[in-house]
Length: 124
Length: 111
Image 1: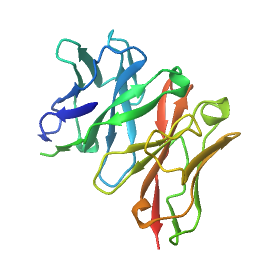
Image 2 (image 1 turned 60 degrees about the vertical axis):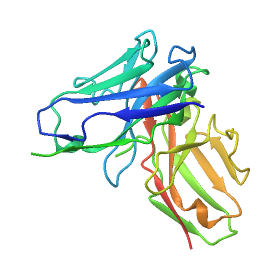
Image 3 (image 1 turned 180 degrees about the vertical axis):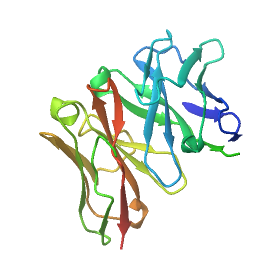
């Protein structure tokens, strides 16, 4: 059974770097036709796609966050990671990792499995 | 402000039918890109409800259905139940961003 689990610090100070890891179990992260993505949700607000990565290292980023975000993959550990630098209070959110089904191509891609999410709070 | 526009809230009585709209543009839904729907129960992660405009993943009741026309899409829920009370999000691809976008979400209240 496919499961995703986010891990990382829950409290950061402004200007620090957010680092989260998603551990995937039940399937190889090297499976073809699947990207692996990060989505966030500020408290009481909607969902925002951050970026996605293929096992080969190919990435897509939300243009509004691209300058601060790096997503990487470690196939040996079946994990992928998110780094976001220079965080502010506006980055306070629940961060989800998810499998990004890209079988039909980018225009048809959707998120079919999600982690439970982890709350990251940015506060001085 | 989301690229895909949804009504903030909808409501209905048990047993009724409700619809949630998702309006995009020529660079999203209007370009023929797939629309997908997620259900988020309070305090939980989103769950895929409809993919590829009309398809239900295994385990999703057939009370849920999706459609797409022009630059808009809709999620319909028939035979409304108390357990359907949740937030619902649409999602598609945006060629102007070369990325994926979500609607702002719709809170469904079962009266």
